[in-house]
Image: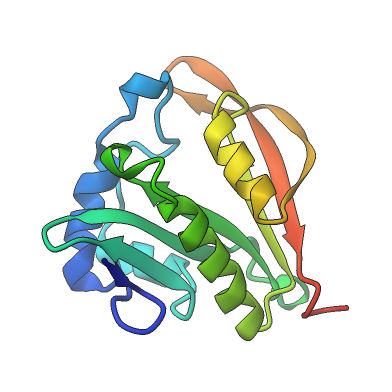
Length: 167
């Protein structure tokens, strides 16, 4: 497995694999990703913090990735980022998500990030448990926040405050 913290960062080359990985819906768990279409590389690259992108893969395929994006362009929120983390269905249950999220937390603190937030569908119990195991706490439920096809979706908001940055 390769880790993005020192070697395999999400780059234009690996982005093509990411496009494939995220375009596949996870029907076996009863819900889909909020984003149906993956944006062009330039847009994705511009919207994610370059210093905090991680990728895990074996020899032939991407197993998971994690990245941070700013919640606001305003300077007052420069240390608040939203977490994106995805693990391939075939790679779940192997600790990849936890390793990615722990490494992302560490990297974020190294770059002065004081708050990480995540929006998760309430029925995604595994993702909620993963985030809580890495120090995230529930802030609240945002009702009917998103609309996927014709269905309104609630989103559970979680956050993690750094104990190293911004104290």
